[in-house]
Amino acid sequence: MVSTAKIIAMFVPIIFSFVLFIGLILFYRKRTGVSAKPVILGAVGFIVFTQVLEKILHVVVITSFPNYADHPLAWGTYGALAAGLFEELGRFILFTWLLKKFHDYKGGISFGIGWGGIEAILLMLVVCGQALVFSFMLNAGTFESSMVQLPSDQVAAIKEGILSQGIDFYYFAILERFLAVFMQMAFSLLVLLGVTKKKFSYVILAVLIHAGVDFPIIFAQVGKITNLWIIEGYLAVIAVFSIIFIKKSKTMFTDDAK
Image 1 (cartoon, helix red, strand yellow):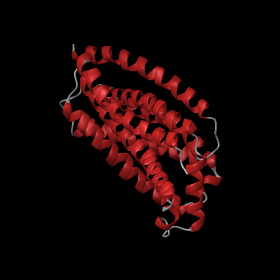
Image 2: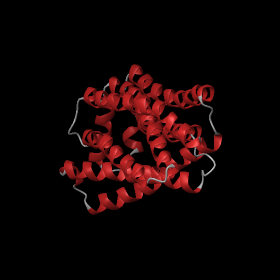
Image 3: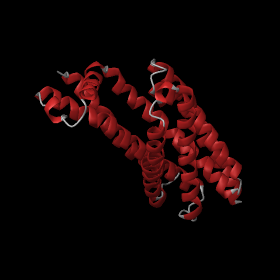
Image 4: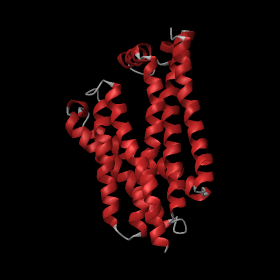
């Protein structure tokens, strides 16, 4: 049985992700203004570049190298670089082709909210939503009968994962998404600066920084880092630098407008 407390813990991050998205829009609408088109394209861009195109590459790589988990260093490097390339080049393409009228600070903030906000919602729906479905099935006694299409060892592994996962994991997810959204906003502004200043080196820098941020997180995903506090502390430091950059970069766009 999955406890009521754990089920509640699975619900909370999903609700938080929607509140975070809406809250960012309301917060920045008062401070800098928010443009609808960059928010929408930021959200759509995240889905297309990370959930479709990047996932296609992952399927090809995992199919070609099924024992990827046995080589965490190589997998971490590949995963981090893939995330950096798809996300930052995706931003660059959208800013260059579809958002030519939104090359200002407001446009960058709006795009970052769309990109980071939808990331939070989708990840929480996938991670926590799936866990909720499995939990209800376990409590109803229909889990095994509903999963007959999967190998028995895989079904057992899923069941063990749901039952053994601590409540703190789901609450950590709230903190992680809160920190990550500011990184996505900072990356959006950095890439946009590269577009407005016609310096592709900014985009390359964004790719490398993004890869550096993701590398230890991917290490954690393959079980090489098990202490969640290490990951959250690392993300907190990055988030602080991201917030500082978000504030400082406003003057860079102001200088361009003069």
